[in-house]
Image (cartoon, rainbow, N blue to C red; front, side):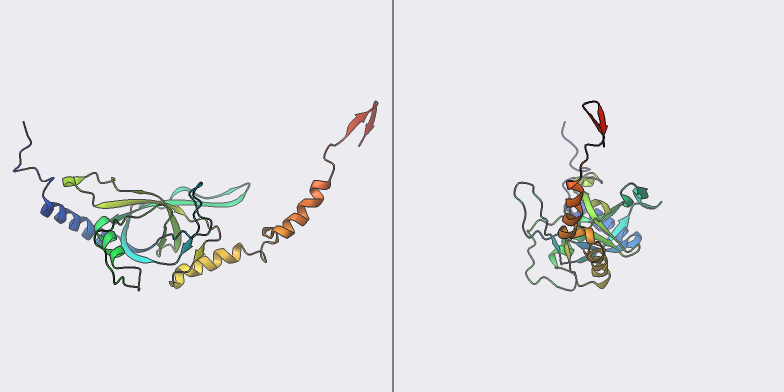
Length: 227
């Protein structure tokens, strides 16, 4: 027996569009504006699939709903043998329709004059999220499109699982002062003037004398103890 075509709405684009609009409206009512910063890979390693010279230079503004009502998740702030570790994580819910609209119109304050409606737009792992409320910069670890599972036969939202961004000398130049100020702070903290051991030459000067030391320790030779 086939499904009842009079009540099955999985093939009704009008119903799907209505539900998509409702999700978008709910996020715009209960959510907050965030900045989406895509990663631009400059020199991707074809074997490792990574790029040590990534650049973040475009930024988009979009509404997002913060799912964490009790604060950040993860290990948060803790002191380990490696120093102070900050491992905050969170989840943002964004509208798929709004994301596509945002990407089609181009970066923030830089409109796209050549809109391609057939291009596939989606958030990618490795891109950044700037959350103005906490002034935090987060990296997308996973973009899940099946959190709300095919209601009426379509995907309407993306659930972005993010963690606090760990700076590795990436170039961040978006033109948004708040975001670029964080990048400058990261750069200064990693500058060799502030951390001399970050300079390979200075590090080698420290390591060479250590490597030249005798670490065999005390031993017995012909029954005689020697240092």
